[in-house]
Image (cartoon, rainbow over all chains, first blue to last red; front, side):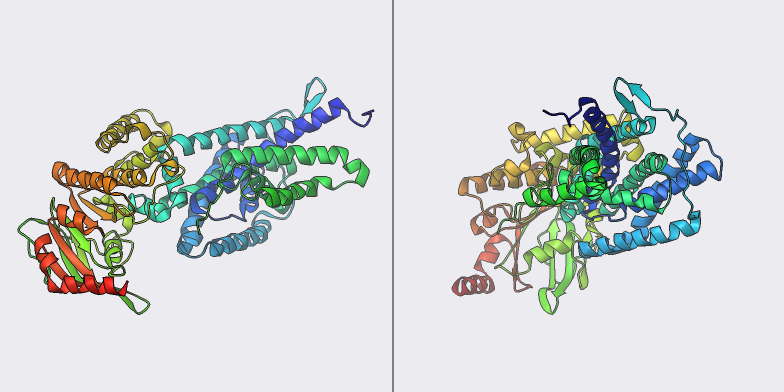
Length: 300
Length: 268
């Protein structure tokens, strides 16, 4: 009856989907961090990842640095970028309508996409991780070591940031800033410092995301397109929820792999690229604040 | 210490002084040339009909509005142009007219946020957590426990504040302001929307804070009975101007005040 359904094939699609999904979640995390603290939607998240990947690739290829040095430099570079961006571009916009911040990030995205090839060159570079290329074979499954590392890094950071927001004093203060800036100020909280911290944390996540995604896809301007995947992930999971980023990432990862595995042969390909957005539109109709998002209750 | 011109008060030590302060919003004069002083450890009430400029005055003290002219001093230090977080760090805490708790968080988290300004450890030690940061955390937690006990919030520590009854939320907000260890406490209608019993409880807490901690209190309140009971001095505002200042007895007999209140009642 179900002769089109193959257990082993499905299992490998699922595994692949979970690993890729966690890597999406890592990037979505950068987006969620900024949204949680500042209420701003960062349309340049994909470009952050691209920039980080360029840093990493240049360090490895042109400077010939060891892998861990390249990672550290990328991290430092992206933290500095996050702080600098907040200080120069975003701080002057504090108190303006949120749409100004959104427009600023859209502009920033275009600038980064335009300037990166000028500075780093237009050719596609590679980031080579110091691991075996050959897939790990585990029963019927072929697992890419790069994806495994990417998923591992994602899980580590998702856990760390969950702890940060739930238990640490700074994380709780950051939630307070997100909840109500004025009241946070009346508590003596330096709101601007927390905004800067949120952007720096987005820089950290982008640095790691840039290295794992860069080693998977290669490093050029097109890497920024990964940022577009963030939107279905966070719309599904909830803009302000770390757990939502994980679950949204997993759902998108699994759905696009299953779709590619089963629908591509029928329709001739390309389902991977639009399946997440179909899901996003359905999510917007059914549950616009996401699975784990804060439901805003307006009293009129 | 010299008293600011126009400010009148009793014989105590001036802790917070508002000197000839004015603020307009797009041509509307919210506060006009108002002066008043809050004496150390005393309760100063600001009363007046709706739209008299009471909350605007409080917002200028806590740094949310910058006055167009005049100045505000704390222990003689000019704080007129300080940002709200600096004002808070100097020891001026406040509550808000509409409850402004962090709703998704527990009572304990809200109170601990009040301690934020007194915490010293930074990003790195916070991430490392152990050691100094750990000891500090314990100290602050003890301080918060004192407040929880004082306000009888023991059973509510882990409750999300959004789920609490209105009167309790007001009490938690008072607790959060107390967690800053303030020298001056600004209370914007702490009894608004409460029933008589809750009002009496809140009045008791305010007096206890004043007497036991020696905290200077500036209170905005509509309930005249409460104001006359617990205030040492009263300032009356009407349409942005100060129309009277004195002890509760003096203010109650003031013809200007009677006129403003009767006028307001007729209009209402």
